[in-house]
Amino acid sequence: MPRRQDGRRYTWRRGVDPRPPAGSPAAPGTEPAAPQDVPPDSVVHAALYRDGVRVASPASLTDTYRQLRERPRTTAWIGLARPTETELKSLAAEFDLHELAVEDALEAHQRPKLERYGETLFVVLRAARYLDAPEEVDFGELHVFVGADFVITVRHGAAPDLSAVRRRMEDSPDLLRLGPEAILYAILDAVVDGYAPVVDGVQNDIDEIETEVFSGAPEVSRRIYELSREMVEFQRATRPLVGMLHGLMAGFAKYGTDEELQRYLRDVADHVTHTSERVDGFRQALTDILTVNATLVTQQQNAEMRALAEAGFEQNEEIKKISSWAAILFAPTLVGTIYGMNFDHMPELHWVFGYPFAMLLMAAVCTSLYVIFKRRDWL
Image (cartoon, rainbow, N blue to C red; front, side):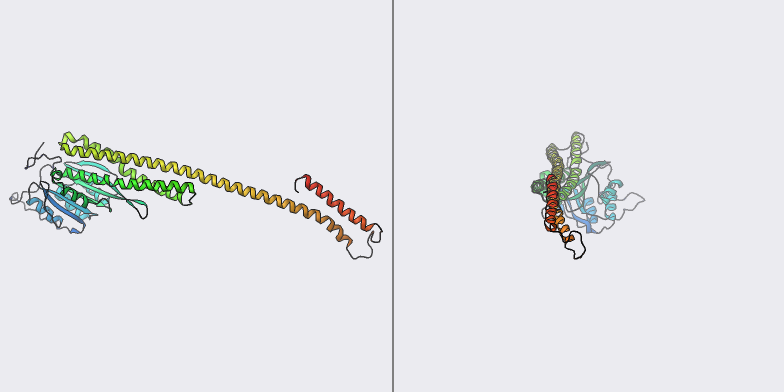
């Protein structure tokens, strides 16, 4: 395993550094290439470290390249946020980054992964943060290039807060002295630690949803669906990390990773596994809650349909009674109407028993109709 000039071994080592040392003459027949001046708009922070201590804070990529050449045995940590294609191409030319990795970092929307291009390690991470006000999970994307003497972070989104990671590393020079791999560990640790508030927030959301489900809140189905989609994204962010960290741990012996750093990485792997299991549990819980909610909604609909059916039945009974009494009252009205006509020549008009006969006829018809309706349970 090759060693640096300060006696430490490289964990990830580039091949032959194409950059000539500071002050050395250029190769015969060639002229030193002028560094491309790149606008620092996307450069969030850049720093050079030696033996765990910051020795420079370049203001732009051009200054970073120059000072990295002039200061041997230093490590550059360059942080960018949504960089332009020009900036990434400048970094690729300076640090010999693979074009596929650069393309991924430029386009974003990548799944978490760990790939090695020659002596450069390329890591894609999905960070997450919980937003209290809208009660939702916001996801960010982070691309990390790790080489022998450089770390480049390309951030798409608000998370994670790498300034806190930088402060932590600068406050721990013994850890920062371990080189670029230690910075990668700190970034992984920050991303994984950022999952904890998200897990707590989602747990609270699920508790609230359970209460809303059994209280019959009308908007709970939509909330369950939206949270389920967020958990799918959360799974996509956490599950691949388990395999990635195990892949890193598998290369401990091959790349001579420091033993203390090995312990730190194993601790991060344990936290990722725990988080991934919690997220799987959340998805299952949301599925069960959605099933229970569908059952409760169905029961509520059945109860409403039963109430409507009962109301309809009662209405029909009332209509029967009204119709029966209407028919009963219609019979004497018909007889009375006929005998109330003002005609001189009508049968039985001057009959002595006409009035009693009409009354008996009306009573008989009404009684018959009443008996018939009563037997049919209309009355």
